[in-house]
Image (tube, rainbow, N blue to C red; front, side):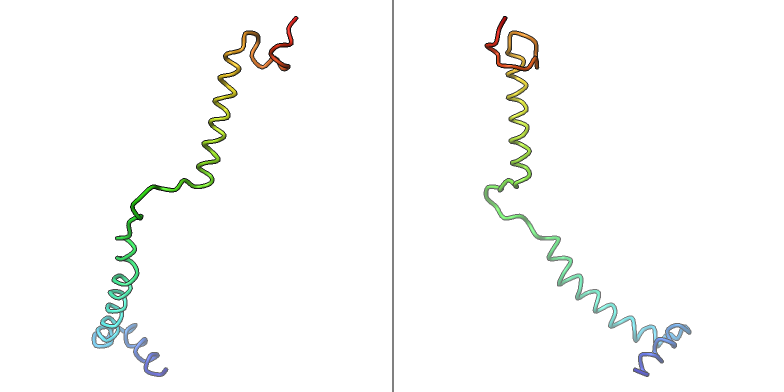
Length: 91
């Protein structure tokens, strides 16, 4: 533990030998992290084949289709749109 403390103090004081001694293992550690974790993750591609729709996407499609069906049925009515009541309840 004393070695780490002494090396830290020497790096903070600007000792070139201590800076090089610390830089080499840190550089190797960063190289290892990049090559083991970061680069393989960037090369990942989704599997080929049909894409499965998520629940939320399907739910949104269903609600949009229901809204379109409701809107078109109102436009096709002969009387006032949204008057309330069954369409065959006439005067």
